[in-house]
Image 1 (spheres, rainbow, N blue to C red):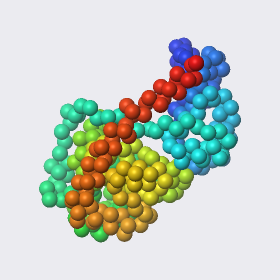
Image 2: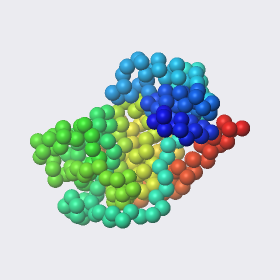
Image 3: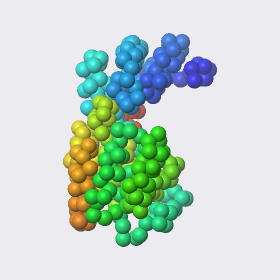
Length: 297
């Protein structure tokens, strides 16, 4: 990666997350360009990244960074306290879905779901710390609906086995990971969507992940964890319900409320579609262009 960049130097090196920052520093030193460090994660408190060395490396390499970017205010506050340096905030919103995908897959037909059953959707990585175990625990408490999980990950086999063991296969369905370009056609078929991260690290606690805004863009109300960034969006825009993501009962109560009150769900849906006109990359990318113009001047 470094050698390729050295052969075609630009005006700015943009290192996306810590795993490319060392390369960025080398390129900057050799070509005398400006360096942007765009971190989408809290590198010092992530699931599976528990070594103190991440903080040591990040702190040392930051000395060579011209502009530091993080994806939300909560994370920027944390970084400022940790390193004494305030990152610029540029949110990682998804792009607007302009053209419908050629994939017109019908989830009801694909999964043999009765038409009267609402689809309760989770899309994303099937990983620990994402509240998926609590979702499965909550399903018997749902008054109606079929839980559909789209994605793949290390936890998938464990969850599939559990669903079979607990005889929930008629109420919980799995779909393989689909291309990002096709995902909106699946998302828009959902009655509601889940983003129920667990508070297992600061990276989760401070998250404002893409799923929250992908649901918004599809007009799908969200049931989300009561964490700072998700709380800010959901309460401000009135696009869903906040829950205790560590409680199956809390999740089930939110699901049953939306199922029992379709008019309330429709209100949340309209709010989501309206908000998506601002929470998108086409709008947010202007902030990145401003950073580039500033750093070049």
